[in-house]
Length: 460
Ligand code: ARG
Image (tube, rainbow, N blue to C red; front, side, top):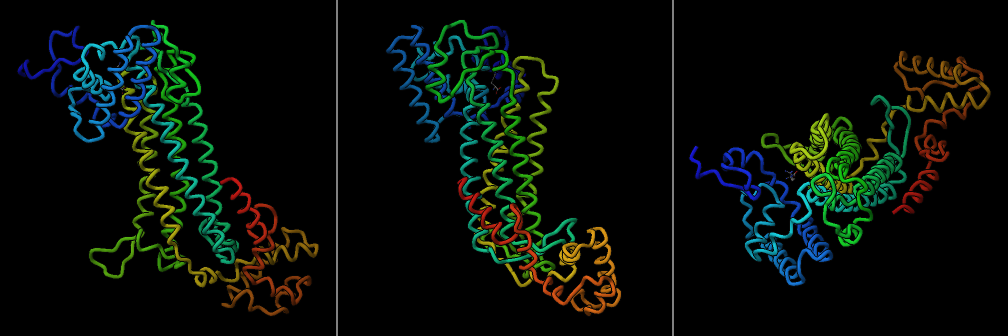
């Protein structure tokens, strides 16, 4: 390798030779951490104020730094910034460009600070902002859910356990379950944000800065509500990124289960729903196909988000304190998970918005789905539930063997199994009636679901 092709980086004083181009490429985080440019510039400006506060830079130098950083931001946002990989990361690239613009003042900016506390600060700010964005998207999806639930109050469908028909439920009740899952997801993310909201800046490389900057004022300026209590903790831990990825994993697992239900229900075999054209695709070969690609990708992306969490957990396992370059691996997985969830939440709201229900197909739920109600009927007349369960089980078997329907058996046949049966048993074969028997809080009766939706609306 020709030595002249090996460039010396900013920290190159101690080195006799430059880096191998392969190492330059391998070591660079710039291709992905350039996403942090806004936070990095904010942190630089705040740090310049802090240095001014202790007399390290003059008022003129502060002005130069502020104006220079504005120019850097403009360049980045207009797309003309030179994101050359030789700069290694976003912090170095911005500082290098600032130095080209304003010279010596820029060389003072890194006083008392390290990229270790700088990157931890940038990244925490980024995560806090990302959580704010995702929280809004969760709220939007929750609103779409409530709207769908309100519009379809009288649609009853078979509810499933083990993917076997179990008991009739209101579609509204089914879709509102997602509202509450999302409510907990939001709570988890807000918790993550609270713990991310602690400013590492001033921790230096690991031991704390030897320059007595006003950390509280810095935190105020940057929008942190607290400063870190321990510099070693502040530059070492990436728990805020890990727990955010965990919260996002749980969130996408919720979406993935609903995606799966909707995919199955949109098949001809179920025919419960039709997905909007805008979120479906066709087949290149089979003209009749309408494929639920949007939801398949929500389901598919779930694997990637879980992978992001595992990547974060794994690079930290057994890692010595404090900063290690391994920790540069914290960004891509979290960026990926945040991007995935942002898309999936929006896609899901779009699908819900254009979803068509087919209540007639849902209503074809068979008689056996009322078996619990028949057993409850006997129980209300004094028969122990276990016995009632057995009696109705025998009636189900009887209907099956005779090839008839449960509602088609004669009262005489019913009475052979239990003298407690009377003519009114036949009124039990009614899905709305069955649902409305469950008027308990959290149940699927119309009044209970209405109460539930009202409680949900109060949260929005
Ligand atoms: N690009 C690095 C990262 O994302 C910045 C911190 C570098 N610190 C260091 N001691 N090399 O982790």
